[in-house]
Image (cartoon, rainbow, N blue to C red; front, side, top):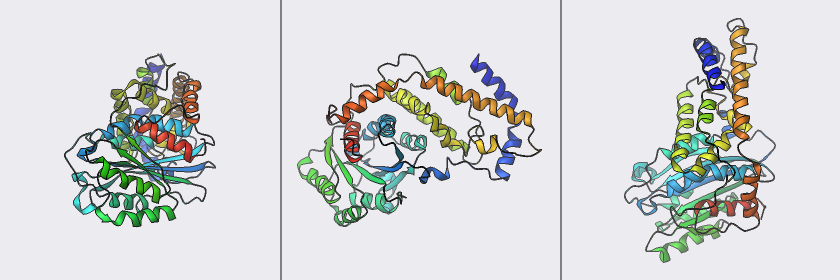
Length: 378
């Protein structure tokens, strides 16, 4: 019945969308979802995390470990106390397609609160390629100077440098950038990928980067499974509920195509990864702040438009119908959220805090153990 109601209301407002979009664009009514993704306009302490990942042939499969577990990392990070204002960015290096002129380094996602965009960009990448040149110093330089870090004095900033190979491919230039990182109070937590036969020569370089930047260092094995799921209490199939929730979005504006594709790619990527990845994704969508990510490209999310006095061009009838769709979305969000007991997430978090979740050479465990120490929870 609820899905049928959504479809009926969607059809009733569909014929009116062109007028609303016209007003939206002409009046430049833009929400906070896009522009503020790179600003901290709340009272929570900023937490900026950049993943700087080696995507060469020697780390094939690493991208799967990151993108399939990123929703869990986000949920656990946002569940910390005190609650952070989290932004995530990703820098890739060592892929030939990134260009020799860029030293094979590319910003895959700038620091942002729109995690759909981050994850969808990661799913565009092939998990495996041939060998690439690893210029670690260029990757460090990009993280430091091309990312728009928070300017708040109390911000916690960090980079997870994940890869292998010799860090001296460009001489010892990396040392100079490490000194800059220490001056900027941006530690590089070096996570070495144990896949190279030359690890005994490569590992000391990663340790030195961590030491020079006041970071931590550890090692991982690619595609090592973690048999500790988060949502042990969730037994329902939430696929249809998620589709019903998605149908309440009325995309509009120049960025609407990118927004819609980011949501779909994040959903499908998690769905085809693991059940726990999909559940972590849906839990993130069930939280109140999720819709704010799309307030600049979804009419229903844009409360500045929905509740504004938009004038005689828009009748109260159509504005009320959009409000009704917003109400239906909120009902679906609450319904989705009730499937995720907070005890499940808190149980995993307490295990990390008490030191009962060892790294076990698993990427997301290393990330979380370092993060809890950095945030002062361990």
